[in-house]
Image 1 (cartoon, rainbow, N blue to C red):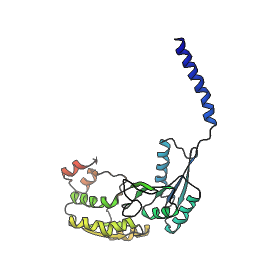
Image 2 (cartoon, one colour):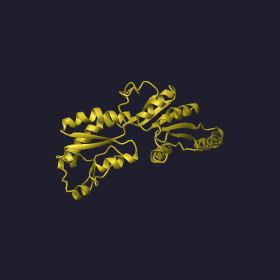
Image 3 (cartoon, rainbow, N blue to C red):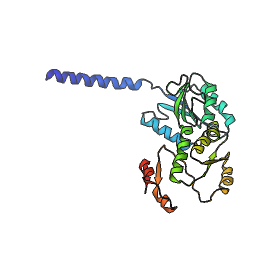
Image 4 (cartoon, rainbow, N blue to C red):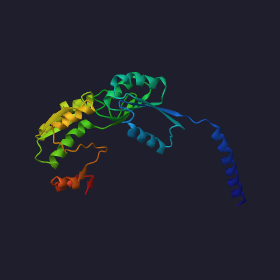
Length: 257
């Protein structure tokens, strides 16, 4: 018993001595570069989400983490300069937000600093960002939305929900290569298989939305998914007189009644 007490006392003394030593050691502050094609105001939710995710892992902005934000304010010609600025700061990682148009300037700016994609709109292999999804092979990795593959699935779900639909309008920004390629090459193939006609509408700025909606029903709601979930709103369906087939209901990940 005496030996056990001595061991516990020794352990407590060692622990007490180790605390001030560790406190005196400077902690490494990791520097993250954040490059976005958007304006800061419109990108605030995504940036806040990234800060929150780091916080859950124990990395606090302003303590052991410093995030350098660079926004192009939708001026794509500024991206090479902003990417080069992050490289000059010698950041540990560059997080690229805003799709394919932001990835290439970051890749041109550095071959050594790791680049993390968030939501790249096209296939990163076809775009030349990585050699393969399993083994990227360079300094680029991250996540992709696989919007090219999901485009056909979205058309399929719309066709199942509204079997009589024949024409579907697609809004896209022609300055984004991934989306433009999907609308012009991938979606028409999927549409033909479903006997649908896709009508593309270019939206380069907010003012273009008024022109587009002036040519579609004025009461058609615009919805944008934030998660890869299949959600059916039965309340809305009832209001517009739409009956959702049971088989489609069974496939939904969430049903709003």
